[in-house]
Image 1 (spheres, helix red, strand yellow):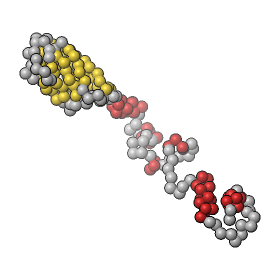
Image 2 (image 1 turned 60 degrees about the horizontal axis):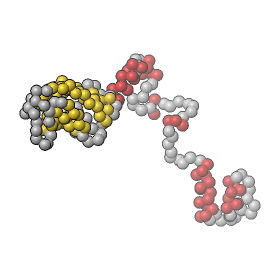
Image 3 (image 1 turned 90 degrees about the horizontal axis):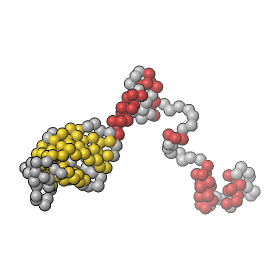
Image 4 (image 1 turned 135 degrees about the horizontal axis):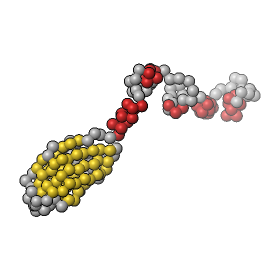
Length: 187
């Protein structure tokens, strides 16, 4: 059998002289390739966007899916959806306890994450001038998100804060000064 004869058979017309002829591997590959382009594989999946009509049974829905039954019994509402979406995008305020090291005090620290941005504010007090070249540890908190860029510096008259993975370090400052700081950074 030739490719032209196989094409004619697939097209619905009788191929002349095809009776009693053998199908070669080349022809079989050709036919299977044509069938693969016409019919879906036996096992396949569809995107939800492919559904244009009909219904999907409740058993096929995701466990958290909103159904008419959930709306009817009040377990799902627009207010609950709005709250859940907001909570999934943003964390609540975190308040960190006041702390100090030998040169500085930090207090009233609030951490708020809004999407992919962290906002941190508080009051930094310089008790003694820090003149060493390295930054000194000031506080640690698991509520403090790691900056996307590694370390964020916040310069104030009371000292320079270095914010990194779950901690704040401090350097410099003028003794006897305090400064209310606010900084935002990508997480």
